[in-house]
Image 1 (cartoon, rainbow, N blue to C red):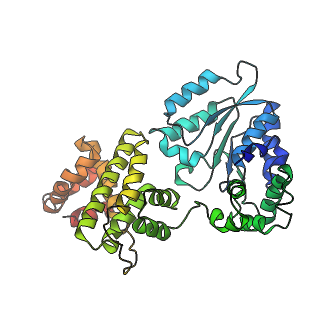
Image 2 (image 1 turned 120 degrees about the vertical axis):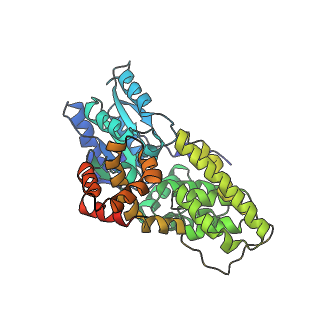
Image 3 (image 1 turned 90 degrees about the vertical axis):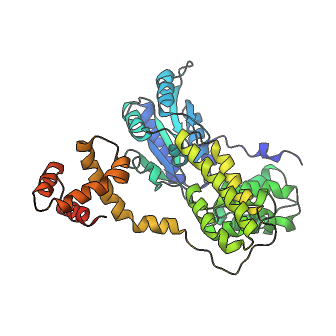
Length: 406
């Protein structure tokens, strides 16, 4: 098939379809910056495929800026990023103003080392170069600190008519008027199926050029975010390597939650004891790689975790899975939710004990807490309890909780 994608390259901001108000906000940001006016960073948010990254790149092109980009595929520490910013300065060797661009910052933040939040906040305050962030989800917990420090520019999903306009422009560029008319059913189907994702629609269009127009419904069902039940069905029912990996990659929950869902529901789908053993063995390996990634902050381990918990679990079965039982919500999450108040109380008391005992909170909770509670109960008559309450500055809720803790 001919490489048609070279025909669809955006050259100017005005070529981006939809979200005109957002483009105007970005241009005003650039014009203010070029005149020396201090502006807080932009946080450009919105669903995938709406043109956020393309808009930033074209903005830099329009205003002759050089882009220093960091995205979710980068594995850097905040210390390395600070060094990069210092080395880059405000302009490159050709005199162009530098733009610091954090693409998909909601995915990028969990990959940074500890202390990323204060370091990034300091960078925002001290940097003399313009800064732009993009995020698929501006309400992600990982960037909650950022929302008050940046101006939000929210891209919306494109309408079906806007998607049709993009595709009809492609038809014109490629001189495919005979194959596709303005009201062509294939284009209408792509516009409907892609759910406002222009990048997805363009990919579907190019894929369709190598197939028949009648295949559009198969081509158009792309790997978009799916709910947990659909993904679990695909993982437990699959008999190939690829399908479970795709299902795990596109589920709308994080890795830890997906691990918990699979763990809870292996017994509901696999009835053979050998199948269960092999599936849980694979899940244990996946959990090991998850923990290694978290501790070392080397997130390449996630690729092994994804394979183990998806394809590994799927191919652990010798026969077909049982569909008799409904999926169960992970009990470990329910238990954590139920014990949230107790864990908060333990943490608060341990923080106060730490000032006196001079050891870690973890050791206090695991080893010292019961001893302190026992002293509080037994020392009621001789004044020991009162002395401890004053020394530790415990409030009435904490005192009551300690006296009841066994």
